[in-house]
Length: 489
Ligand code: NAD
View (tube, rainbow, N blue to C red):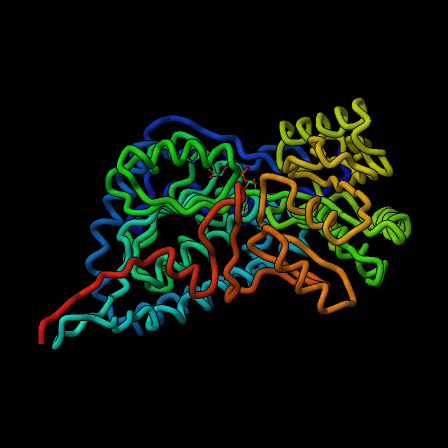
């Protein structure tokens, strides 16, 4: 018997692929038993899409393209706006689904549909603002102008940890720009994407404009190698990104990549140590340590190093860990047994090699939580900057603290990984904040706080955190390409 609340299975949507507005019965026979990570119990047997379903989805997208492109921009905007409103109206069910599929604690899952709706509404607003420009030209008299055209059919591959928001950020922009989309959610978290696919249908999106095919690597491979796909947008790990690039080279299909990170908090001695410690803990708490944006390295100026570490540990010990369905839980399980063992492996090697001092956590949680995949929130101090703890994305509730003495050393440490997604600076000195922000090799820098990724921000990574951006004008441009027209007058 477990004291954990049973997951409310009646919120789950039909899990069959949604293609051209119809449900398909997958033909390949592959089934993924989706597991609720908090209890280790199977929630649904998800029939996985394969090459045939991907073929059908791409064909549906190609067939729908002329109608979607020809639709007057205000009509496209109205449909996408209605979809955003329906996502908001469905928030209670979507957040329950989100907790069930990813074990995100319900207090955070409750906010996710509103965030997704905000991204969708923002992109809906771009529908009638895509435009182009008049270009200086010669010889005259002549007119030269550009038109921003959609690519055509866009493959959108999303990760398990933020399927709803990734879908809204990426598919929202692609659709607003006039593309059709084949969305491939992962087998680990297929449900919210399928539910949102239904809601787009209710909003009046023409059949075939958005197709949803849940699947694993097989569906992903089929999609990125498909000759009918005009652009690939991939969000996930670097290892899978390499396979996506290998597949895309077959037809030289353009690819945008949103990948992982090993982001740093850089805390200077003049910042409020309590506030800085609270923000630094978000690196371990967001998504129970499973967020691309998490600041998982905490670099602290030496005079306040011990103080910040103590505040962080004291606060961490008060935070409720456990049942994601409980209203006060802030840290849930990691997504699978494999992930749990992998994270414990990193912790075990760090202890064995002495690459950091274990300050708190470090073990799997037992008792009532034993059937689930719970790793105790873990902090290491004095972490060797060259170690696995400091260099690799662990994707679990593990923070690596290290002290620094000079601004240059802080920058060297913060920039000293192969990643470059985000960075966080904590200081009361505004000039230093700008200098450090300028020196950080990251796509996104937050100073003295993190309150989420607004849809208007261009979000994305440098180095091996990817290229391309989601959000803002830059995010829309991922899904349009300029056609230049020169006209003799
Ligand atoms: P993953 O790379 O394992 O899977 C991502 C997606 O790729 C899934 O849909 C998966 O089914 C699919 N896939 C698997 N094999 C494939 C193949 N051969 N060809 C095509 N597609 C294939 O990543 P994950 O574990 O789902 O997600 C976690 C990773 O995503 C972390 O590294 C995290 O940092 C990153 N992430 C990045 C962002 C961002 O915006 N930068 C956002 C969320 C997550």
